[in-house]
Length: 163
Image 1: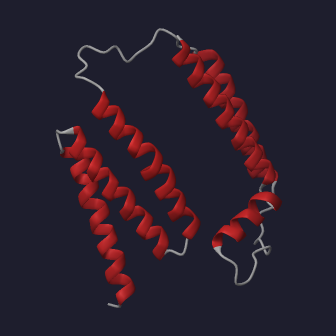
Image 2: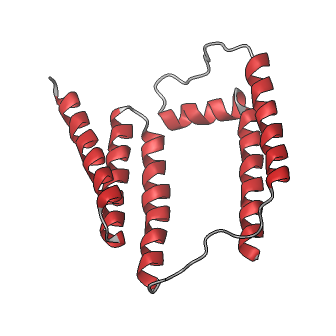
């Protein structure tokens, strides 16, 4: 067993043990700090796989954004009892139409696209440069469709939160 495998198993153990404690811990603050270790373990695995862009995004988005927001939300909120999470605004028909249309577009793209080995990777460049080239050349349509899907989800979340 070489050093790479030892470091991988170390990150995997950190990720699995801290994820177990996220689920089993009763205190929300302790659970959130274990979630921090889980996110760092996943970022370490990304680094070992050579996906430096994903590792940085993992740390910036999940640790820097979501986890800090979760900690502030928990720390600044008093005990909340009898909260009704379900709202009365259930829009099954529009949601079904939107998901069906988006699924149809993705399936037609997958069926009608001839999958070939992409040869636009830049030799010696980082994974970020290669990812950028692929997103703006080969997969631009799928990239734009995912942007539209995220915009629709944001509008839906704002509509639900407004009520």
